[in-house]
Image 1: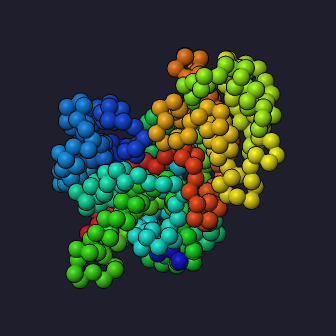
Image 2: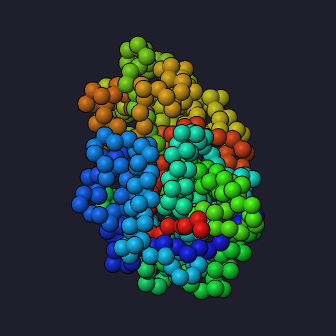
Image 3: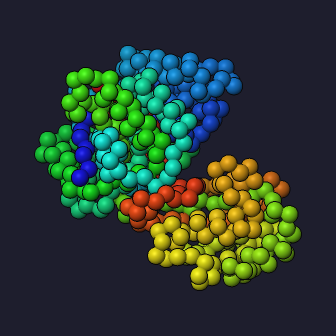
Length: 415
């Protein structure tokens, strides 16, 4: 069963939400955050990217930066830019991209569910990134930003959400940069909150879509606080962390593509010939060509697009990992031909999220920065859930979820 609870959210007043809200901390660098915040002292970047309050070049891991985050979080509350709700609520957060809307329930999930594996992951985490997020949670005593979960489709919850979606939202704005619509409702009916808690309790698992490091950090900080409290009972607020949970069928996963700096000493002709061992290679000309189905890839090389269709026997449809296009391309192209084995550390490869389109792949190759580009067919949410259920881990850089959650709409305090 999945344990969730409502919480007393800390939120901006309606008239300030567009001043406060921001992109997540991990989708932009310090200088981009500095530029986006500009002279807006109410921007959440002062809490989630507080290095912008120091001279250019100050490390985001400087101890003073974490202290500044806590100082700014207190300042936001003292100034009334963030205000805590007087009672516990669940919330609904909707995002609309290119005419499609997905509705998420904002809840507090239990750290024990993460530790026991009831909250399932599909990516490896890095200890240094976990430690960074742990420091941020500790110093603020809060989950400033939510994690992004998926849950199996549920008709009861869908009906409840749609009832609220037919009413006027608390927040409703078009975000800068992404241009997507973001809406937010407060659930204040006790019966509705009980229904949400009960429906989640029927679910055997929740799935991390995005936010593996934030989830791990929240669970580790919760465990620390348990040990520090001699009177620990299990219902304290630090046992919970904030998540936005979406029905799996609503989520949009875009392609996550690759660009490589060289062909491992091969000429273009030699590279194409080696590809023919495991792929049916077809020249598609100079117009941008997008993969049409699973196990088909698009290659951009020397101002030409090629279709690469994996041959039968090069993948295993019974293996949740072996059937993935990210695995096929990593094994048979990047590793076997180009000798790029570790995607996390190699300097010869970079990754481009699908929101930028295949035109970005063409641009980076045509500029001479990169030698070739490889476009993949998107991973499905069902594939992610199958892998998580099997206890396996996806290859790196496999999923790109859009839209990204905006930060600053609601915050969860650990006490």
